[in-house]
Length: 168
Image (tube, rainbow, N blue to C red):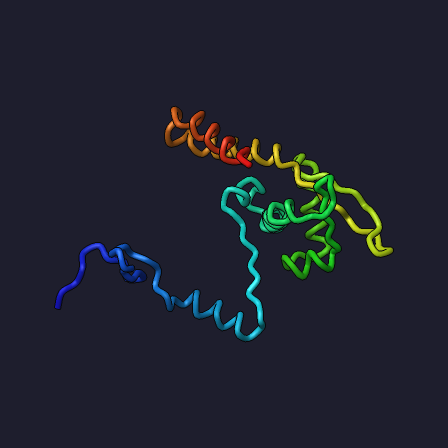
């Protein structure tokens, strides 16, 4: 019986001999089952850096991540998007209270602006993500994390992160 050294148990080899995730992993089977049963498999994805910025508060991080996702999808020329509390709950699982608390914190942090405007006759909160402030805040967190590891890399990483974000 032969075995490969350093072969991860959860990986298969692709055509080039590189390790890849198993095609029939539990995660893929579960997501396929959810999609087959419900017709959709929507996810809420939160980058670890966003969660850290939100002080590990899942509600804030969920709202911020969803605003990042939505910020380029609005129809308004001024980059505001609107969501009713019902839509927030349907799309993220956040309650009205959680959305209100998270948006207050994000507003105080300078990351969003809000306006209440009627949509189809109902007062609805409109949100605008301050993208420049978000980039500055995330770059600062990256810098703080790197100072412990390698102080000389801090400026390089900050510059590279900012350059990547400013590319169109």
